[in-house]
Structures are given as structure tokens and as C-alpha cells.
Image (tube, rainbow, N blue to C red; front, side):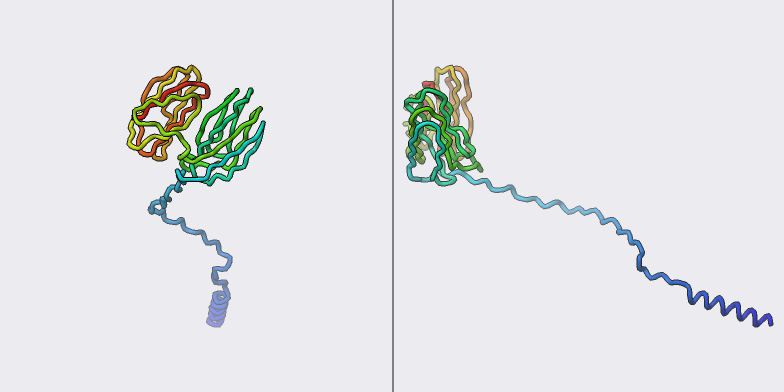
Length: 230
């Protein structure tokens, strides 16, 4: 009788073990292991290439008008341009603005005759229109570098107001003199690099370096000045 009960107990234990739930993995939460730190260097991307202005030949473009106007241009993108602006009977504020990097080409009053450059900044926004504020008849003429006056080596070039000059090859120094007590700025553009070399509110007499293909822009508005390249 005792053996019978023992056998029954053993059978029950075996049946219970055979019916117990076995792990299946279904519904289990698996925590991801943290990734091993990477020691590979981050990729170095090359800097974007900046488009350089081109000193190329282009047809002269002339516009005439009276008073305020917006003037669309056909000037080719990326080509350095030189605006000659004339308003001989202006008697108030005069301004010529653009949609490009060189955004203010003329800022004057009274009768005006001068030259300013545009499309000369490395990676700049090219000019496609002029916004003119004037109170009289005006003429805007755009030329390429061939339309600029070229100075003679060692010979003083005297002028009045805003101007851009072409410098002969081989020149290494520029000398600038003015007795104006208004604002005077002089920029050099040598082998595509722009530098502000004079920025004065008093009379000035000094020199600055030149090299390569060079141009000089004078912002003098109503001042007299003299420039010599050597």
C-alpha cells in the first residue's frame, strides 16, 4: 500500500513537471547593448568653391531715364562691370543701388559724374538690376574693363570724384594724395583680391602695394585727388 502511494506521488510530480510552461522568448523585453564608441574621425568635407568674377569682354550697355527708375540689366553674370553714371542737372539726393553684393554704387547729391565697379567680389551675388533715385535726367553706361582709363607708369593722374582706374602690368606701388576733408576711400583689386587701402575723413598722402592684374577704385564724391602708379 505504501509503495502504491509513493508511485502515485512520483507520477503526479512527473506530470506536473511535464505540464509546466517553458520559456519561449515571445513578449520578452530585450534591452539593446550600448554600441562601442567609434574612434573613426568624422569625414572632412571640402569647403564650397567660390565663384570668381571674370574680367571678360562684354558689349557696352547704356540706359537713359529721368527721375526714379528700376532698370533691368542684360549684363552677363560673373563678369566685372563698371558703371559710369551721369546726372548733370540733379539737385537733390542721388543714389544707384543694385541687387548684388556691391549694393550701393552711387550715394551723392547735386550734379554727378562718376564711375563705380560691381561683380568684383569673390563668391558675390551678381548684379541684374539698378534701382535709381534721382530728380533729373540721367545716363547709365556699363562697360567691361576696356572702358576704364589706364594710368601711365610714373605719371600722376589727377581727377575729381568717384573713379576706377586700370593699372599697367608690373606696377608694385600706388601713391594717393587728396586735400579733401570729406570721406575718401580707395580700394585695390589685385589678382581678384579686394582691399580697402585708404579710408579717411581728412587730407591724405600715402602709398599702398599693387601687384598682378590691378585696378584702383576711388570713392571721393566731390573731392579732388591725384594717383600715381610705379
